Amino acid sequence: MQPSISSPARGYLAGAAILTVSVFLLAATAQAQSGRRSPARTTTVPTISGPKTVEKKPDKPLADTRTSLVIAVEEQNAFSRIPYYLSGTIRDTCGDALRKSPLLKVDIATSEINHADAIKRAKAEKETYVVWLQLGSDSFDSGRGSSTQAPQDLYIRFTILSPVTAKVKASGRTYQRINRTGQGGVLGRIPGSQGSSVYSEYALKQAAKEAAERILDAFKLNVPTGPLPGYAVASR
Image 1 (cartoon, rainbow, N blue to C red):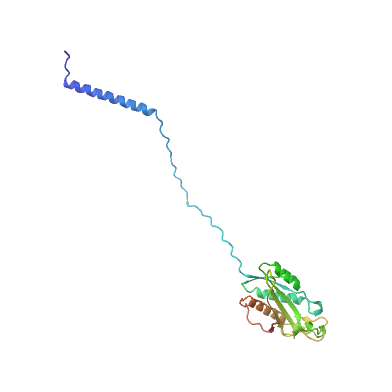
Image 2: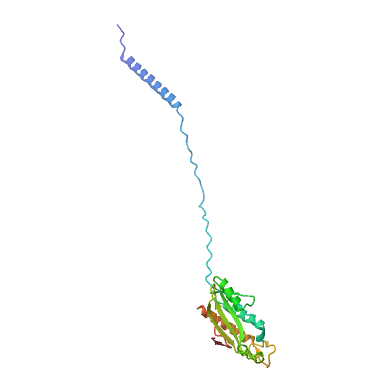
Protein backbone atom coordinates (compact mmCIF):
# COMPACT_ATOMS: atom_id res chain seq x y z
CA MET A 1 0.00 0.00 0.00
CA GLN A 2 1.62 3.25 -1.22
CA PRO A 3 1.58 6.19 1.07
CA SER A 4 -0.69 9.03 -0.06
CA ILE A 5 0.74 12.41 -1.01
CA SER A 6 -0.83 15.43 0.43
CA SER A 7 -2.11 18.31 -1.68
CA PRO A 8 0.70 20.76 -0.78
CA ALA A 9 3.29 18.21 -1.71
CA ARG A 10 1.65 17.58 -5.05
CA GLY A 11 1.66 21.30 -5.83
CA TYR A 12 5.34 21.56 -4.99
CA LEU A 13 6.24 18.68 -7.26
CA ALA A 14 4.25 20.11 -10.17
CA GLY A 15 5.96 23.45 -9.84
CA ALA A 16 9.40 21.82 -9.76
CA ALA A 17 8.59 19.90 -12.92
CA ILE A 18 7.46 22.99 -14.76
CA LEU A 19 10.59 24.83 -13.69
CA THR A 20 12.81 21.97 -14.88
CA VAL A 21 11.14 21.91 -18.28
CA SER A 22 11.46 25.69 -18.65
CA VAL A 23 15.16 25.60 -17.84
CA PHE A 24 15.68 22.82 -20.37
CA LEU A 25 13.87 24.71 -23.11
CA LEU A 26 15.82 27.90 -22.43
CA ALA A 27 19.13 26.01 -22.57
CA ALA A 28 18.17 24.35 -25.86
CA THR A 29 17.12 27.65 -27.40
CA ALA A 30 20.35 29.37 -26.34
CA GLN A 31 22.42 26.55 -27.79
CA ALA A 32 20.54 26.75 -31.11
CA GLN A 33 21.02 30.48 -31.34
CA SER A 34 24.71 30.23 -30.56
CA GLY A 35 25.18 28.19 -33.75
CA ARG A 36 23.77 30.93 -35.97
CA ARG A 37 25.73 33.92 -37.30
CA SER A 38 24.34 37.31 -36.73
CA PRO A 39 23.68 39.15 -39.98
CA ALA A 40 26.15 41.93 -40.76
CA ARG A 41 24.84 45.35 -40.01
CA THR A 42 25.37 48.20 -42.48
CA THR A 43 25.99 51.56 -40.93
CA THR A 44 24.92 54.49 -43.07
CA VAL A 45 27.04 57.60 -42.58
CA PRO A 46 25.14 60.73 -43.58
CA THR A 47 27.01 62.98 -46.00
CA ILE A 48 26.95 66.72 -45.55
CA SER A 49 27.75 68.83 -48.59
CA GLY A 50 27.02 72.34 -49.65
CA PRO A 51 25.05 73.42 -52.74
CA LYS A 52 26.43 72.09 -56.00
CA THR A 53 28.21 74.64 -58.17
CA VAL A 54 26.83 74.68 -61.69
CA GLU A 55 29.42 75.86 -64.20
CA LYS A 56 28.00 78.50 -66.53
CA LYS A 57 28.73 77.84 -70.15
CA PRO A 58 30.41 80.76 -71.91
CA ASP A 59 28.12 82.79 -74.09
CA LYS A 60 28.51 82.24 -77.79
CA PRO A 61 29.97 85.26 -79.57
CA LEU A 62 27.39 87.20 -81.53
CA ALA A 63 27.66 86.95 -85.28
CA ASP A 64 29.01 90.03 -87.01
CA THR A 65 26.12 91.21 -89.18
CA ARG A 66 27.91 94.26 -90.58
CA THR A 67 28.44 94.56 -94.33
CA SER A 68 32.13 94.11 -95.08
CA LEU A 69 33.94 96.41 -97.53
CA VAL A 70 37.50 96.86 -98.67
CA ILE A 71 38.42 100.23 -100.21
CA ALA A 72 41.06 100.23 -102.95
CA VAL A 73 42.19 102.82 -105.47
CA GLU A 74 43.66 102.65 -108.96
CA GLU A 75 47.31 103.53 -109.47
CA GLN A 76 47.55 106.99 -110.99
CA ASN A 77 48.26 107.21 -114.71
CA ALA A 78 51.59 108.98 -115.19
CA PHE A 79 50.36 110.67 -118.39
CA SER A 80 47.38 112.27 -116.64
CA ARG A 81 49.66 114.76 -114.88
CA ILE A 82 47.72 114.24 -111.65
CA PRO A 83 49.92 113.98 -108.52
CA TYR A 84 50.27 110.38 -107.36
CA TYR A 85 49.54 111.05 -103.71
CA LEU A 86 46.03 112.31 -104.46
CA SER A 87 44.89 108.74 -105.01
CA GLY A 88 45.78 107.85 -101.44
CA THR A 89 44.02 111.00 -100.22
CA ILE A 90 40.67 110.13 -101.78
CA ARG A 91 40.97 106.45 -100.75
CA ASP A 92 41.60 107.26 -97.09
CA THR A 93 38.98 110.03 -96.99
CA CYS A 94 36.31 107.80 -98.51
CA GLY A 95 37.22 104.89 -96.22
CA ASP A 96 37.15 107.05 -93.08
CA ALA A 97 33.73 108.42 -94.02
CA LEU A 98 32.34 104.90 -94.50
CA ARG A 99 33.73 103.81 -91.15
CA LYS A 100 31.36 106.22 -89.44
CA SER A 101 28.51 103.84 -90.19
CA PRO A 102 28.07 101.19 -87.44
CA LEU A 103 26.57 98.87 -90.04
CA LEU A 104 29.78 98.62 -92.06
CA LYS A 105 33.08 96.86 -91.49
CA VAL A 106 35.61 98.76 -93.60
CA ASP A 107 39.20 97.88 -94.48
CA ILE A 108 41.46 100.12 -96.54
CA ALA A 109 43.89 98.52 -98.99
CA THR A 110 47.44 99.78 -98.61
CA SER A 111 48.47 99.43 -102.24
CA GLU A 112 46.94 100.61 -105.54
CA ILE A 113 45.34 98.02 -107.83
CA ASN A 114 44.18 98.06 -111.43
CA HIS A 115 40.80 96.94 -112.71
CA ALA A 116 41.87 93.34 -113.33
CA ASP A 117 43.27 93.07 -109.80
CA ALA A 118 40.07 94.55 -108.35
CA ILE A 119 38.00 91.88 -110.11
CA LYS A 120 40.38 89.16 -108.97
CA ARG A 121 40.20 90.40 -105.40
CA ALA A 122 36.39 90.47 -105.45
CA LYS A 123 36.16 86.90 -106.78
CA ALA A 124 38.48 85.72 -104.02
CA GLU A 125 36.28 87.24 -101.31
CA LYS A 126 33.44 85.29 -99.70
CA GLU A 127 31.50 88.13 -98.09
CA THR A 128 33.51 91.33 -98.62
CA TYR A 129 32.64 93.84 -101.32
CA VAL A 130 35.48 95.56 -103.15
CA VAL A 131 35.03 99.31 -103.59
CA TRP A 132 37.39 100.40 -106.36
CA LEU A 133 38.12 104.12 -106.69
CA GLN A 134 39.63 105.98 -109.62
CA LEU A 135 40.82 109.56 -109.80
CA GLY A 136 40.51 110.90 -113.32
CA SER A 137 40.12 114.04 -115.41
CA ASP A 138 37.60 114.83 -118.11
CA SER A 139 40.16 116.88 -120.03
CA PHE A 140 42.62 113.96 -120.07
CA ASP A 141 39.91 111.46 -121.04
CA SER A 142 38.80 113.65 -123.92
CA GLY A 143 42.33 113.77 -125.32
CA ARG A 144 42.82 117.48 -124.84
CA GLY A 145 46.24 116.80 -123.35
CA SER A 146 47.98 117.87 -120.19
CA SER A 147 48.63 121.41 -121.43
CA THR A 148 44.96 122.23 -120.93
CA GLN A 149 44.49 120.11 -117.82
CA ALA A 150 42.04 121.86 -115.50
CA PRO A 151 41.61 121.00 -111.79
CA GLN A 152 37.86 121.46 -111.98
CA ASP A 153 37.73 118.57 -114.44
CA LEU A 154 38.85 116.08 -111.79
CA TYR A 155 36.37 113.38 -110.82
CA ILE A 156 36.24 110.34 -108.55
CA ARG A 157 34.75 107.21 -110.01
CA PHE A 158 33.61 104.46 -107.64
CA THR A 159 32.74 100.88 -108.56
CA ILE A 160 31.33 98.36 -106.07
CA LEU A 161 32.23 94.76 -106.97
CA SER A 162 30.28 91.93 -105.34
CA PRO A 163 32.14 89.08 -103.62
CA VAL A 164 32.54 85.75 -105.43
CA THR A 165 31.02 86.95 -108.72
CA ALA A 166 32.68 90.39 -109.05
CA LYS A 167 29.43 91.72 -110.52
CA VAL A 168 29.02 95.48 -110.36
CA LYS A 169 26.58 96.35 -107.59
CA ALA A 170 26.76 100.10 -108.21
CA SER A 171 29.01 102.74 -109.78
CA GLY A 172 29.11 106.48 -110.27
CA ARG A 173 31.16 109.69 -110.28
CA THR A 174 31.57 112.70 -108.05
CA TYR A 175 33.27 115.96 -109.01
CA GLN A 176 35.23 118.62 -107.16
CA ARG A 177 34.52 122.20 -108.13
CA ILE A 178 36.96 124.33 -106.16
CA ASN A 179 40.00 125.31 -108.21
CA ARG A 180 41.18 128.52 -106.58
CA THR A 181 43.05 129.33 -103.42
CA GLY A 182 41.17 130.62 -100.40
CA GLN A 183 38.73 127.67 -100.12
CA GLY A 184 40.41 124.81 -98.37
CA GLY A 185 43.98 125.76 -99.24
CA VAL A 186 46.30 125.16 -102.17
CA LEU A 187 47.31 121.57 -102.76
CA GLY A 188 49.83 122.19 -105.56
CA ARG A 189 50.21 122.98 -109.23
CA ILE A 190 49.92 120.17 -111.76
CA PRO A 191 53.45 119.19 -112.89
CA GLY A 192 54.08 120.39 -116.44
CA SER A 193 50.74 122.16 -116.79
CA GLN A 194 50.37 125.77 -117.84
CA GLY A 195 48.32 128.49 -116.25
CA SER A 196 47.71 129.27 -112.60
CA SER A 197 45.07 126.62 -111.78
CA VAL A 198 45.71 124.68 -108.63
CA TYR A 199 44.15 121.70 -106.95
CA SER A 200 42.23 122.09 -103.73
CA GLU A 201 42.69 119.21 -101.31
CA TYR A 202 39.55 120.30 -99.52
CA ALA A 203 37.47 119.97 -102.68
CA LEU A 204 38.83 116.52 -103.46
CA LYS A 205 38.09 115.33 -99.93
CA GLN A 206 34.54 116.63 -100.23
CA ALA A 207 34.15 114.70 -103.48
CA ALA A 208 35.51 111.57 -101.75
CA LYS A 209 32.96 112.01 -98.92
CA GLU A 210 30.21 112.34 -101.48
CA ALA A 211 31.39 109.08 -103.04
CA ALA A 212 31.09 107.48 -99.59
CA GLU A 213 27.50 108.70 -99.32
CA ARG A 214 26.70 107.27 -102.73
CA ILE A 215 28.20 103.93 -101.66
CA LEU A 216 26.04 103.93 -98.52
CA ASP A 217 22.99 104.60 -100.68
CA ALA A 218 23.86 101.54 -102.77
CA PHE A 219 23.63 99.39 -99.64
CA LYS A 220 20.44 101.13 -98.47
CA LEU A 221 22.19 102.48 -95.39
CA ASN A 222 21.73 105.79 -93.64
CA VAL A 223 24.15 108.56 -94.51
CA PRO A 224 26.26 109.38 -91.39
CA THR A 225 26.89 113.01 -92.34
CA GLY A 226 24.80 115.85 -93.66
CA PRO A 227 25.08 117.61 -97.02
CA LEU A 228 28.60 118.63 -97.89
CA PRO A 229 29.32 121.99 -99.53
CA GLY A 230 31.67 122.53 -102.43
CA TYR A 231 30.94 119.55 -104.65
CA ALA A 232 28.70 118.52 -107.49
CA VAL A 233 27.42 115.06 -108.35
CA ALA A 234 27.00 113.46 -111.75
CA SER A 235 26.23 109.89 -112.79
CA ARG A 236 28.02 108.56 -115.82
